[in-house]
Length: 271
Image (cartoon, rainbow, N blue to C red; front, top):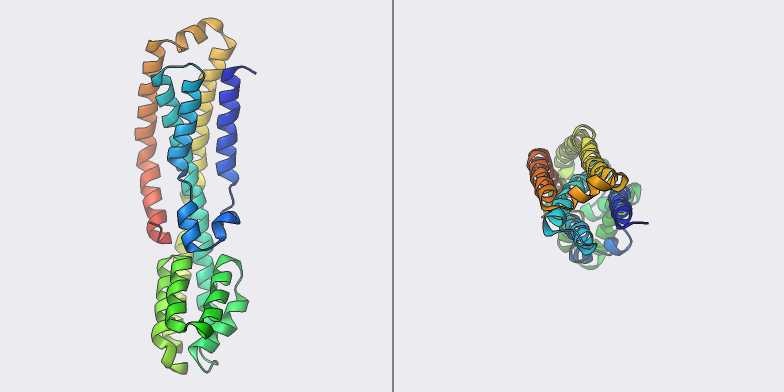
């Protein structure tokens, strides 16, 4: 295979990997809140560096490499928003389920710790695992510390509210049931917001990545098929045009990607 073919295949593999990456992370990333933050790979700069370095490494100019890096960064940024949106939706739905179960248990449980212990097994997924840990730690280190650790693991605004409710109501017995119902409504609304964003905004971003990738692939394919076009593409004039086109693409897509990324981070509590 020619260098151009390797570039196209490698770029397609990167885009495909980012598209199918599990929303909840891998086993390595699920070891705990500290380990997840420490080992999370920044997809956008890494992808841009790999793509640009690959183009420069096979003998193209710096402008060619910069153009390729910008296009790779745009694709990675689009798909990373989709992945973050999936995590946000999953977390919001999990917290909503936990808040609903906890509100039901608040009317029958003797203590807050008892309510948490009864509610935790009824929730699945990462939030369910965090709730189970909350119930276990409440018996060993106390409900206040366990609640703070739960908020650190789940990292969302509604999870923080739930942790505050559990912590403050630890001595209230059944008197906190009404507040738990209010939290249930808040968590349900947050889950609806996350689902709407994912279905109406994030779901359209893979199209941005696909258009950019196919455009770059079309240019490379034409150069591979026609020798005279290939000679022109490797020149300085073509490199300048590609670099300018990549900058325009980045500027146009940034008007969609950056606000979407900000909304996801705000909703999920990510830093």
